[in-house]
Amino acid sequence: MISLRRGALAAASLVALLAAPVAANAHRQWMLPSATVLSGNDPWITVDAAVSNDLFYFDHNPMRLEGIAVIAPDGSKGEIKNGATGKYRSTFDVQLDKPGTYKITNVGDGLMASYKQNGETKRWRGTEAELATAIPKDATEVKLTQSQRRLEIFATRGSPTKESLKITGKGLELEPVTHPNDLVAGEPATFKLMLDGKPAAGVEVEVVPGGNRYRSGTGEMKLTTDAQGAFTVKWPGAGMYWLEAGVRGGKASIPNAERNASYVTTLEVLPD
Amino acid sequence: MRLPVYTAALTGLMATPALAADLELSLEIPRLTVAEYHRPYVAVWIENPDKTAVKTLAVWYDVKLKNNEGQKWLKDMRQWWRRAGRDMSLPADGVSAATRAPGKHQVVFKGDAAPLGKLPAGQYNLVVEAAREVGGVEVLRAPFQWPPKARATSSAQGSSELGAMSVTVKP
Image (tube, rainbow over all chains, first blue to last red; front, side, top):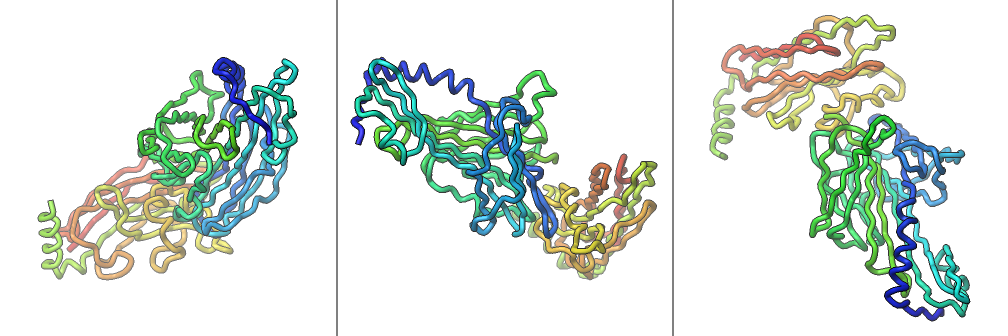
């Protein structure tokens, strides 16, 4: 077991300062489904998955496909098909072979550490399993950060269903009040953010419409969750929207670590 | 607020002969001069004034394609799909039918027979939504009162995927 000494306040704020530019430079992770509302007996969707600044343009890095999981309408595990990773984006297909709502997730749980060794600041990134051997015994001012991230998209064949929308109770999650595949431009939509299964109050939510290459402004909306973790989005029009929220703090599942939890989804809003 | 509803229902019950009333839809599918023309998919349904769907009367689509492939595009009739279509099982007898060619069409729905059947007394809209492959979508609404006390007609005019539409109710 590593001996973790909480650094002095000064050291902690220094780390926070160091961390700030990293967050500002962070690119957006996104999955973009070809359709979210489908009819017929054998519909498929194809999904682009990438990391970039502009939405939804793949011009930076592809998203890795390893972490992607499919939850079928009955809660069973589905699968991705025809996965491929290119220079700027990954693509994969999902066959909606059951009626109802599918959820496609990319969930990650990573660790970051910063520490001092012989007066030098060092950084490490890895998993919980690697942690025990990753930090040298003589390290001081060890600061551990657990990053729980969750990306989700939804697609529905026929009537929207709720089984696959159930939250896991880990990290930051979206609990729909309005079904995420029942969105139209003229109707505000309400969702709840849940942190470890409990309402996440006072969390800032960013909603960004796609297609910013053809606009001067980003068009982003900033919303804040209420005491029940709820927030309501008034769509400025139909289209694809990227939604992100993040929290610092709360319970980390790793001892002595600070926790960051983030949630990202892409929502399709149809014309009335 | 409950009383008027009750009264309306009562009126419906008393007007027994009106159960045999007819609802007649007259609909023009415009002839379009486009390079690639496909007949539109059309959904016809009855909605309450708050736009909730009451029942679907007709869905014209490519019913004969193998493996029900025509159903893949039913969601393009967006309003109908969201309010009624996605909860239905298709093909449905007396509702599903082949697409129709450009021209004027007259469809009569009998008050005592499927798919119209028994409709509680009240104010409604008849809604028509057309979606065309390589084309657009258009929705038209025309109000009507049920059961009709006298012959009454209301109409709407399309501008792209639909032409003139009228609804006539007859006791």
